[in-house]
Amino acid sequence: MKICHVISGDLWAGAEVQAYTLLRGLKEHKGADVEAVVLNPGRLYDKLSETEIPVHLVDENRNGYGGIKRILIGIFDQIKPDIVHTHRYKENILGATAAKECNISHLVQTVHGIHEALKGFKQLKMRFYMFLNIRLTRRHFSKIIAVSGDIENTLKLTYEAEKIVTIHNAIDFSSVRPSRDASHLRKEFSIPDNHRIIGTSGRLVPIKGFDILLAAVRIILKDHPATSIVIAGDGPLKSELVDLSRDLGVFENVVFTGFRDDIYDIVNMFDIFVVSSFHEGIPMSVLEAMALSKPIVSTNVGGMIEIIEDGDSGLFADARDSGALAAQCGRLLDDLSLLERIGEGARERVSNEFSAEILTEKMFSLYQSVMARS
Image 1 (tube, helix red, strand yellow):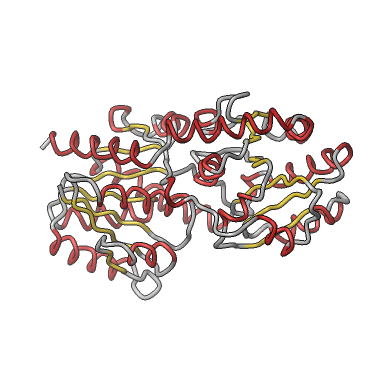
Image 2: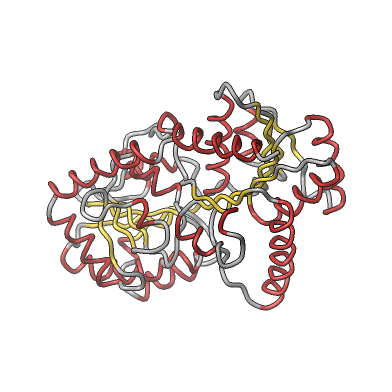
């Protein structure tokens, strides 16, 4: 079975990590022959180029919509895929229109998350793209894969229920390996040896609720002053969050790392991994933290309730409730045996339910069901 994935690759975020994990798994599957089309040079393209997976770069910065579509048609004509699998709305639109020209009838897409609300011209532009995406998805796509049951329920408001299936994100355990001892990073970030570390990672955008996290930090430090907070990632809210940390009087205990390509090393130094988001799908960062035996303290939103078993692999707090978030972190800081037990439970949970092998088999079975409808 020939499968071609089409993905933007402009970031190295959850969708890209998930596509890379799946493509590597399918490459080793005896029933699959995979190739990929990536629309931007970057980490995803570089990492795929290091594998034996054929990868085609169609740089969207040098080609407009029409140019990308023509190149895609040429690639599809050359490799003749049985299934085209797309990620995100832009790739859905391009993949569907190019596949139609090549008489490819089996299209699958993954919905990795729910779009954030935008304002002004950006909102109008997004509405137009989403209109096209919905119309083409209804007409041309055989299956829509949601990465969480929460996202599946949202998609059912727009699409036929029988088109939608949930396949959770997963991780390749062999790739989640720190390369440096935590003591080196403590020195780099000037974190005292006696400090416990609460950390998180992600894009610094409103939906992640980092302002709520910083408010929780002020509460945590009252009872646990020997605590440092590490926020790994970059984004449009960085300067605003730095200013907020100063206003709250917690700046000296907060480390903003910016973008890092050694995220496993950073997460490995955490004692607790915290999620303060207002909505989440199945975040790769959380699965990776669990694989590193980190207990999770999270808001009880979206796909997080599908990942975490409260009290066994993590602890929940209500969204937008900084006091509840602080209290759950405090429980773990006060009871190190509980912290260790939940960390071990987190690793066991992700190993049993969210492995790359499980993802690969579920996805291949879905491809088979799509092909069987020919």
